[in-house]
Structures are given as C-alpha cells and as structure tokens.
Length: 479
Image (tube, rainbow, N blue to C red; front, top):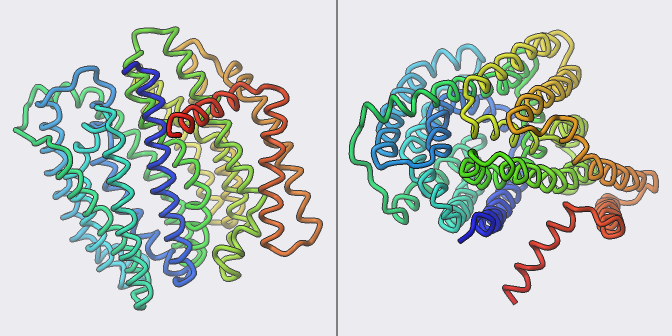
C-alpha cells in the first residue's frame, strides 16, 4: 500500500476512532455532569493533576523515540517496556505514600484515598504503551480503534452506574480505571508482541533523543496543570470544576482532530524526513486540512456556547459559558501547534523542543500570579496571549527546518480563517432573535455550516475540496 493510501486509511480509521471514542466520552460526560456537581469535577480534576504529571514519565520521550526511529527492533520495544514498568511501579509508590501530604495541603481528606486509587492507572499505562506504539508503527489503526471504542463504552457504563448510586467523584475514578484496564487487556489479547529483555545499548540510543522529549513534556504538563492548583488553592473546588468542564469541552474536538493527525502524521512524516520537498508538501496539506476542520468546530462551539451548555448540562453549569468561549480562542490554532512540534520531533531536534518549552513556560509565571491576585478570567486572557506567543515560536523554528516560514503558513490558512470567522459571525447574530435554546442552537449550526459549504464550493477552496474528495471516495467505495 502506498504512503498516501496508508495515510488516508489511517485518517479514516483514526477518524472513526476519534468520533466513536470522543463521541461516546462526550455523551457519557453529559450524563455524568447532570448527576454530579461542579465540586465533584473539581475534586477529580485536582487529583488527576498528580496522576497526569506521573504518567508523563510513562508516555513521554521514549514513545516519541520509537515512533520517529526508522527501524525499531524487538530489543528497542522490550527495553522501553521494562523501563516503563519499573518506572510505573516506582511512581505509584511515591504517590501512594505522599497522598496524605497532598490531602492536608488542600484540606480535603478524601483526596488521599482518591490518589491511591487513581494512581493504579499509572501502572496500567506502563503495561499498555508499547502495545499501542507497535500498532501505530504498523499503522494497524483498526485494532486501535475497536479497542478504544469498546473500552470507552464499558468504562462509561461503569461510571454512570456508580454516579447513579451516589458515589460522587469516585464514579469518575472507577470509569477511568475500568476503561484503561479493559483497553490494556484487549491490546495484549489482539497484539501478539511480547517483551524479551532489557538491553543497555538500545536504552542508551533511545535515551539520547527521548530524555529531552521527556523533560519537554514534563515541563508542559506541570505548567498546563498548574492553573488547577491555583484555582483550587486560592479560589474553590467548584470554580475549578467549572473551569475543567469548559477546558475539557473546548479540548475535546481539537484533541480529537489533533490525535487523528498526530497518530498518522508522525510515522508518515518520519518516513519522509530525508525527502525535503515531499516532507514540506505533506506537512502543508496536513496543516491546511486539519485547520479547516478545526476552525469549523471551534468557531461553531464559540458561537453556540450558551445554548449548547444549557441544552446539554443544564442551568447549574451556565457559568461555564464565558470560560468556554474564552478558552476556545487559543484552541483555534491547536492543530498547527501540534504539527509544528511534530516537525521538530521528526527532524530529531529534541534539544530545540526542550528549549522552546522552557521559554514558553517561563512566560507563564506572571500569568499564574495574575490568577492568584486578580482571578480566573484575567488569568485566561493571559493564557490566550501565551498561546499566541507559543504559536509564533513553534511555527518560526519548525518552518526554518523544512523551509516553510510562518508567513507561508499563515497565508495558507488565511482563506479558511476569514471564511469560517465571517460565517460564524453571521451565526452569532441569531442570538439577537431571542429564540428558544433548541431552535437557536440548531439555527446557528445550520447557518454556519451552510455558509461555509456554499462559499467553499463557490471559491473552490482547496482544503474543502480535498476533504470532500476523501469523504465521497470512501462513500462510493462502501456503496
């Protein structure tokens, strides 16, 4: 199968995976949000910070090393597997024995037992990661897709069951653990790879690239989650619950798209790293297509935020609306951020990746101070400014690596930005008609999508036509 066909099939299977997994997750989260309170979500969100920081060590640089390496050996896979397993057990032990201190720090005794329980996910991840990486390198996205669909559905059912039986925040913990455990079992059942041993030379080779990627990701996760520490420590768990709901809603569609693009693009771009012209062309098409789709979803979410929240979550979550609209602003460029970092990884510049992360995160320090002294909304505006600065840095350096400067990148996406922004502005005007929330929501969505399709057809927008071509060809083949 050609690389183009592999990429198209990869995008389609990952698209099915993303829509199924994130779609199911979205439905499950709506059901849980109607049962649970913002305070419950704030409590889970806080404990997840410590789990996510720990899991960064498992998910960090070594998986990137394996994905970018042209020819991975059994020794490489096995070495990373055993390293991750020992690391996972060690990290869980640290969290287990420090859970009491964390609970005292935030003044909630239940945090202690929740961290001990949620921490099991770290060990599960250490057992699962290599199975996922081997399937990604084989571009066996069908197995990845079916596994995530089944595990998400089962985990969601478990979470809803416990929520209905008044387990509160713990219902989210049980949902996560059951989903991850089932996924791990299915990966080991359907993928026949088995570890053999730990090899020092393989570890040294992978560590040379992976250690900088690991530090970069660790810095990113710590700083990204520090907003939660500030909100819970200096404001309230309910405020953090509202913030996490808004944050998860705005990240869901972009991470779904970025997940599709990144899972397929990293192995694909890595295979073209010695062919500069083909690499640039593939990257350019990825940016234009992914940004077109992302802009439609995120602008649509900004426009419909109020009716969307009221319909799905109810009036107790209405305070989420402003958070959601503001957090959507930096999310508009999320695919470009992800792809630009991919190029830096593909080119083997983990040193540059680390340097950029350090610069970007240092600029977050005054923004955290704003959150402590002036509140959550001013802090979000600071995060928006930081996202713009980060975009400039990522695009500038990745552009230099493949001769695709930031000016060209912006020029390529500008038609999509203008078209979708103006269509969204027309959709937002519907709020002045004072329609009921259901009619307002569907009228806005219909108007925005209708204008985008109509104008794209009229001006023959390249990225729209490419998406249309792929979709129609697969529909015709299925028929």
